[in-house]
Image (tube, rainbow, N blue to C red; front, top):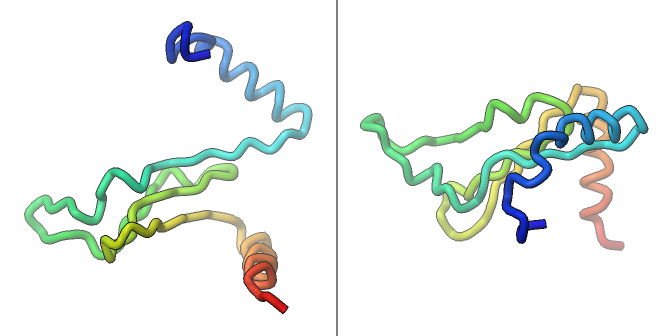
Amino acid sequence: MLEKGVLEGARDIFSRYASLQSEGVEIIGIAGSNRFGVYGIDFGWGKPVKVEIPSVDRELTFGIADSKDGKGGIEVGLVLNKHVMDLFDTLFHAGLCID
């Protein structure tokens, strides 16, 4: 699709997403990047201790940022209702266990 330009089809993107959602398709969004260097920014108050991406509070969106230790890792943020987060926590930790 990039041969036609990055904005090709942008006019109907929202109607396509709405159509997919009405069919029950889950839309996942990503906000941020591990290449922005957010922990290296200093506006005169010192470098940030914790960075949050406010747009991650809707639907199913993951926030991504570089790790604050500067060793190439990433931070991933996710906002869910408490009961869903509890289920996610259980499944995530179970997935980390290797028997």
